[in-house]
Image (cartoon, rainbow, N blue to C red; front, side):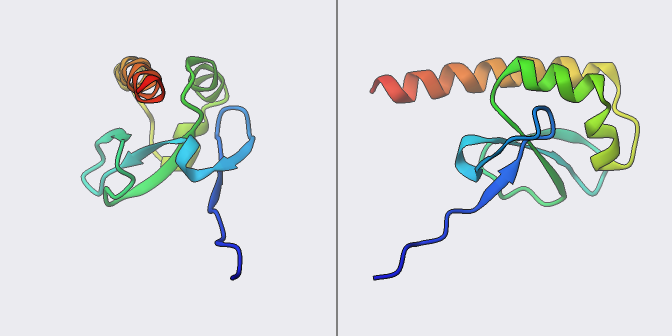
Amino acid sequence: MAQKKIPSRQCIGCMTSRPKKELVRVVRAPSGEISIDLVGKKPGRGAYLCPSLDCLTKAKKKKALERCFEQPVPAEVYEALAAQLAEAAKEAANGKEE
């Protein structure tokens, strides 16, 4: 049987290609709202980040989200993303323990 192709995406912070399941999707909804897409099915333009605050910091420094979403991203969004990434990292750690 043929190997199933594993989709990979590139982190906009560290520019590393990783399997899609290992990355966190940040989405800009058609309304312009920016949030984390934990399921990966929200409609809108998506960008991928490693689940670490380090990659979010790098993406903020090089304005990668602004380039991907073609709109300015307010500081409040970065703060909310940092909080959501920290929460997602905790959930991932809890999931690995079980």
